[in-house]
Image (cartoon, rainbow, N blue to C red):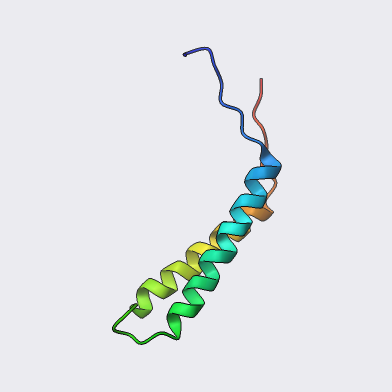
Length: 67
């Protein structure tokens, strides 16, 4: 197993991270409007920021480091 390299499809990774980021951002925005006893504001803010980070990660060009 040592000589085998894992290959990541850069286009698929970008698309998936954008989709997950959008879903997480929307879930965080919905959580902001729920009553505080269900979801804390800090948790909702964390979900929103994590989603935005994943969206930005999906927008960055992923380089495939093959030698």
